[in-house]
Length: 284
Image 1 (cartoon, rainbow, N blue to C red):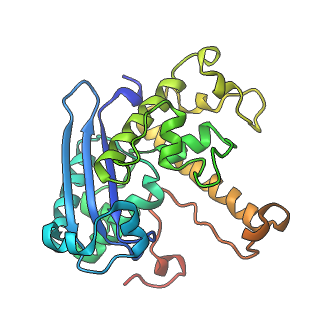
Image 2: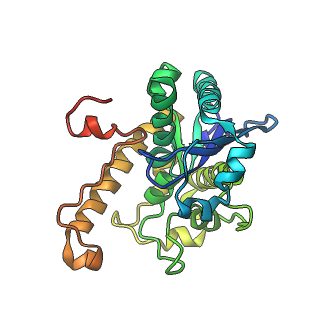
């Protein structure tokens, strides 16, 4: 079997009305089948969510309420189309790939499916999601403790990940669903290519990474596994990363002004329980 990074992938990205997947609405979507030696197949949606967006969201993706009202497909029509397309991808065993896909995008789509279709995302696709490739999870595991490139650019945001793995970045095109989806697929390919390169031949920056596991190179954990096993490993890595961040937030000596003694970071990946389920109540 071919290594996971050269197989066909379905890159998925959303732009949304705010940062919280529990309350956000989809305003644009790109689902792009890419790689595997086949032509690229691109589907995009512009969605009228029927609600006002947060100003901060508009500042990022530049899709105003007025523009969406005039040009977007009503959410009650667009969400079933998006869910059907994702279900077709899952049924074909093509992995879904995206940046922060498990912590945000898939949960956003799950809530939209519940809102408009009365069922969860996994209920709509009729099977558990077991072939998800999240480039943020992979990057955090393979290249931990990477220094910040600036005070304003996070170490694992999409731009930083893309540039770390040698991809050009167009800030004018960024934060559009199509561009971000393609960049996540390209980043997945670059991460996989390093993992499947002999350790001694990997880039110098990889050898210089701080690593709590001594000389062992974490890219090895991404090599020579199938997509299902890579998915299972990401479940563990996402959980461990969340636990580590929670400990950091609760430690006043390390977290400083971000200190929160009661911080709780949910590391469930790639689909998190809805809030009612987390608290032990019934989902509405």
